[in-house]
Length: 343
Ligand code: DON
Image (cartoon, rainbow, N blue to C red; front, top):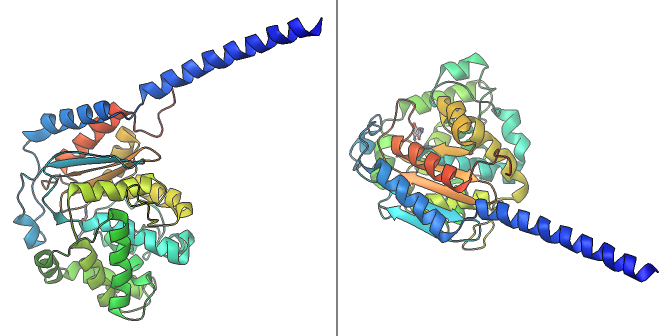
């Protein structure tokens, strides 16, 4: 009597599992990061914005004004290590403020995520990236490691007796994220070092308020060197993909930062990565991201992919015009928004 009942019950469960499986498979297919989907999304965004003539190169650092405004490259790296690109992925531009993310990663790993939170804060300032008003408002607190004051302070927190010790750690952190030895663009470094009096003033203020505890000019110089590292679109996408992959470079397999610190770092990128336009960006894309005045933007779709675009012309907030548009389109096409509920 029992056996036929059992068989009937087992059959029903199997059918249910099958139907559920098909439903799940359907969902996965809807957001599948296939070669075809990714290449189509990259090509479409590349073509759509190639002719866009908006914005202008940063010129407050003289070397940046001389960079070719037509450089335009897009790269996407998935967390399983597949690399896609379109356009100019050979030209190197200076990483600029995107470096702040990776210096913050190093400080978090060395001293814990609370070290940044307790020193300069983790809140968007709502001000331009080199705002002095933002420092004055809360005596150097209530800001974040992605604006100049916070980033120079974070640089001063990297452990090391000598300049070379600190720089060596920063450089190798960036290299581990990118998966190759990145060059220093000496012309950019010299140009910025000769004109960074505002950052020196910012560093002195952060010292006066007790956030920087060693030589503020040394911290400013090491920060400037970090901003002058050369990257192409593929390097930046690899760095973003390492964040998407919980801190391990998906191609080299090398751990670049501790996985437990990645969520906090992505949260700061989400709230402050595009400076005073961070809210608009997050509203539109849901992606933690970071821009640099060299023309690059990285964005992270956690667990899925890292993406980067390089295009030097910037908008008024200091964010690449083409990069913002191309990344938003590509992420939308590939279901990259982490806030998007599963359908
Ligand atoms: O300190 C500076 O002003 C530059 N080295 C970096 C600024 C930057 O990239 C801001 N980006 N949007």
